[in-house]
Image 1 (cartoon, one colour):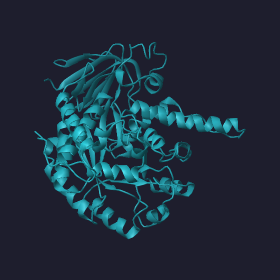
Image 2: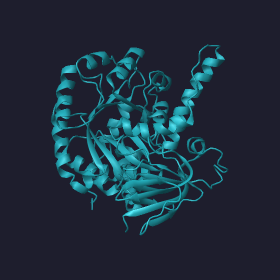
Image 3: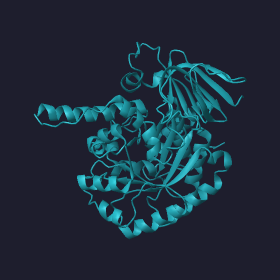
Image 4: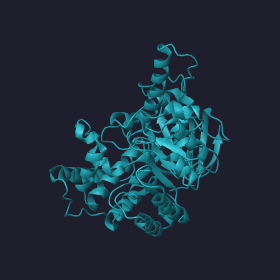
Length: 444
């Protein structure tokens, strides 16, 4: 297959720092990177993609997901599954390494179908070799860009870092180009500063970014300022959720330069609290967006954008109805689409790699059909993406210039992923809590 791809004749939303948006333009890809963006481009020996009646934009960046939970999609009608402290550990106890592989694989492939090109996959299963191997293989087989966050949940101090080091050694050059490895702190508030400092220092010495759950529980004591004063928080830290951080906590986050990611649909449906959308805007903190898990939340970024903008609009309109003065401006579509692309990439440490269609950036691109009745006519392309589009509009997905979805169909073997996921789902449903699978599903 040619290393050159010319996506021609679409509305181009570059969202770039250097490249404007175009009503009609072309995107030239070579060697897995954006070579040029502009009208009437020509390239010999390039594969031609007709993007007429389409919107071409950076692929969505899902900045926080637990892909191992994908086989439990849409089970949120069972109220018990909404209680993370009880249900998710119970679900984890039902899965063996083979199950984790199948669930992670179908979750990542499902993300591709929704126009997501980068997934931050938080692995909070056991820090055991077979589980890590299974997760790693699922990332390799899925083929999209990922950040594999290995959590320290249930691990002795330092052991998670050792496992992550072994992960980096086993990726290989081709995998390393698409997969980054990071350290996951299961609860910023639940551990004392000394214990955190030991693990985080080891992570930083290994060149790893730190992702940390923060402000998840309303009744958990917080000591964010203490963490900052000890030098723990900084630009290489991504804080997840933050629903229950107070005003002073958020001030501390802002001053430290730490990044914030929230998952609005999941947080609202699972009772984790309303994400601090306006509070972040007031402080100039540009957050990233994530799916979290699909137990009771949609797995696409269209839903996350609409949830985020709707939350902020609802809060401001409520303030206006209450007669409050000085109500801030409504969040606009041009801001929230960046949260799902540019700002999500920045929040996870990949802002110089993906999230924009600037020359030199990785060619992670999505082509969205703009001729479907659900959004036609296109009065405003960005408004159409944020307010009107859904997964049915996703036509093609490219990661590093390689097509993973064409004409709405996955290029890879989706049938195998579905078959494995169905088999695992049936076994997990029938298996008593605490008993994991003894039968291994082949990973090849």
